[in-house]
Length: 506
Ligand SMILES: NC(=O)C1=CN([C@@H]2O[C@H](COP(=O)(O)OP(=O)(O)OC[C@H]3O[C@@H](n4cnc5c(N)ncnc54)[C@H](O)[C@@H]3O)[C@@H](O)[C@H]2O)[C@@H](O)CC1
Ligand SMILES: Nc1ncnc2c1ncn2[C@@H]1O[C@H](COP(=O)(O)OP(=O)(O)O)[C@@H](O)[C@H]1O
Ligand SMILES: [K+]
Image (cartoon, rainbow, N blue to C red):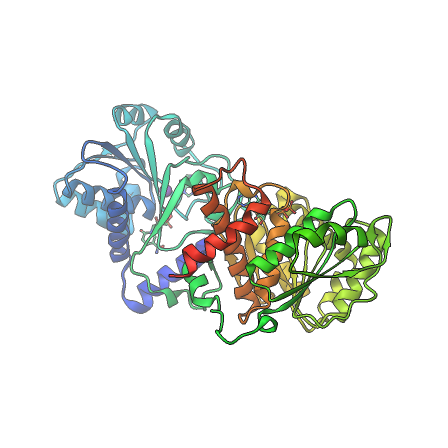
């Protein structure tokens, strides 16, 4: 499923109108009817519905929705916010059609009109502003929005909650807090930003008949879905052997932190790695050996319980993951450099490895094999040299620039984990839940991703399939045997079996 900016939506729209003859009022008819059909799933004939109509095309959708719902027997009133002469173009066409059906509307004079017409309504349809919103809300929207937000009614927004910009990096002051948003054709970027997504409530996209190729480019920014996983995750070949399923190496762990590397290793094996070696300090091996019985070990030189060097490792692996529980110490930088120089396989860098990476970053571009970084926002902000809130304002832009500058894959973790390829393709993940916000979840993800990168699929597919499996496992477990309070990272490792069996064995 594509994710679009306002400009991409307008460009697609223009192309459909100018090149394909899908005129604006036809698109608006499609949009309004599709939205009305979706609204029907959330309301009943007993509900009292008020549709708030703004000045632009979002308001135009409102007139189509009103006509469609009235024709289907619902109790609907319309409050048009601008004066009559300010409704123009396709929106005016649809108001005329609406009136030709014999339906009427009220016009907003001051806040009292809203107080009067919202009284007794238990559903408000927000068709005030769409992707054309610019700057802070102006009068009278700056009064209307807070009033709607304090009403005790179900609020359903059309396309996006009014006041929320479509794109990232745009500040806003107030916006409609929706219960449900019916997105027109493609979700907009703001549906996936930590500070704007909550305004949407739940959302669903409806098809208004724009063919996919209209965006004029191959799909390069979208939501990675179960269908994508099913289409790209390779099946196990009946005659394959352990070597065909990838020989992985995990470098990490310190005497003070034996747990993370344990979780990474077990997760890698559960996710499908054929063979796994853990290179760590001696004391960690004695702890690990009993819980990761399938792995082999390399004892590395150490200082004060931390890995000091990677001497003794022969880099003949299909994939390497480094950094989990390694600790932060000056030697970390040197040993990471060695790994990046010597390993001819994909190298995934996580956690403490990311802190050791910063000085070496400019040299990463010279690697001929993929380099994968899996930062959470704090680690990513450190690599970028910006503050976390600044990063979260524009995660798409920051990730894209960073991935292309250094030629790396970036898995920016969070509630909407964002995978970016060096070419700039971006995939958002909506699986996973707050149960994952607990130490260790990231270590488990690193192991799953390591296993995935060693299977016969592209790195782009591997990372996306791994993130999807990780999030879906959390979702399955919290639907069933666990809650978002008690879920442990180790539960994810064992729960992975359920995800594979439930989703991927049909
Ligand atoms: N393919 C498409 O793009 C389609 C889009 N449609 C709808 O059209 C919408 C976009 O239409 P428009 O471009 O007319 O944009 P809007 O409906 O968002 O309206 C923009 C207008 O609102 C006013 N406005 C902007 N910012 C404001 C602020 N801060 N305070 C107060 N008033 C403000 C301005 O008068 C501006 O011209 C979409 O969100 C969608 O709902 C559908 O009708 C059909 C197809
Ligand atoms: N609120 C949330 N909703 C969904 N997923 C989350 C949430 N918080 C964290 N996660 C996921 O949990 C993992 C946490 O990783 P990370 O921050 O590296 O933790 P740690 O290193 O402590 O294990 C990531 O995969 C992230 O996407
Ligand atoms: K809206």
